[in-house]
Image (tube, rainbow, N blue to C red; front, side):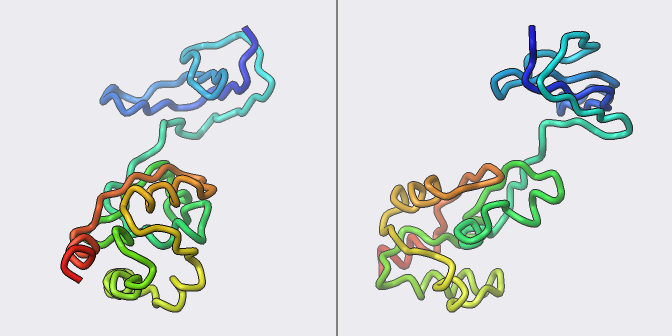
Length: 162
């Protein structure tokens, strides 16, 4: 079998709790196809000797709810090996909220992350009112990492109570 990518000679830390081990990792059609001593060829080969090969890490507590709109790479999370983040922590999210009330939820995020409402206004094209509409807006963005999100109780309370 010809693989798309072969990562050779790496130290694999697979997240299972087992000790790290030396192995090759073969990728086919975007998925891990084999782990071990792989002799087949690949379109691209990376020599990972001296490096750790792992599936990535999840940051379960971020406030990237606004940043996701202007930072497709998810910096600086991606610089640290983070491949997935959870937004909406501490009760702060940008939805549900109509565009007319967006400054109320922006002020909440400003207090947590020190991002000015002016910066958020410049970086966010507000196109939602409901939480599912917000998730759809995030889903349409180019992203270098994976995002999941909680609905923030502050935005929900503001949406319901005004």
